[in-house]
Image 1 (cartoon, rainbow, N blue to C red):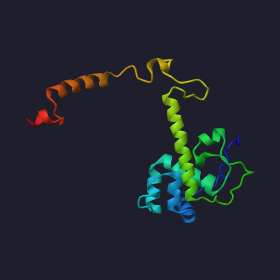
Image 2: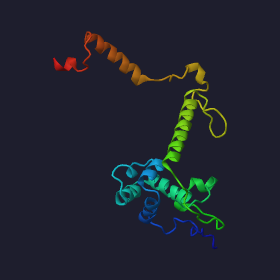
Image 3: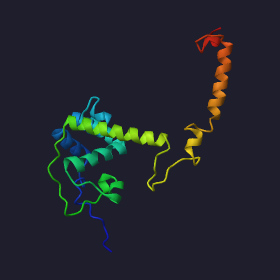
Image 4: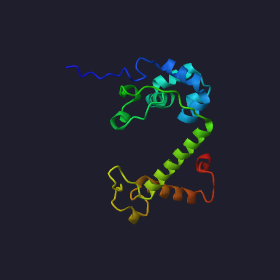
Length: 186
């Protein structure tokens, strides 16, 4: 059987991390890479060598850079479904798709993109807190069934209850002292 998967159409096939990063830095520069990817190695004392060292150790960051390389620098159409779930190096690029010209990126576009991401994150967090978060099947997710009965409060906090009762008794023994270490200094 010859069911081998052909990765040769993937622009990452046979390309090591250092030449990939050199191509990105030569075309976009570290400032735009940081603005779009928000990886600190592109902001704090950026160099190709230090970035390669970091990216080799950090899978999530390397995959983020490789995805940027495929879909911004090589301007390939976005991956769909099962292919998106795979790391960029393992994705199969159909033979009818070929790399195009690098996308023109600017710092203003990066600011707009980051603002949009922040807004989506805030909406997601707000929906999750209010009990309105929907999972992928459309059902609400709440642990106790009805979130409105608890008015957003957690039902079990044994550590906090014990901690708060200890702090109130120690505060009363300090007789108004604002220094939490006052009794240990005596």
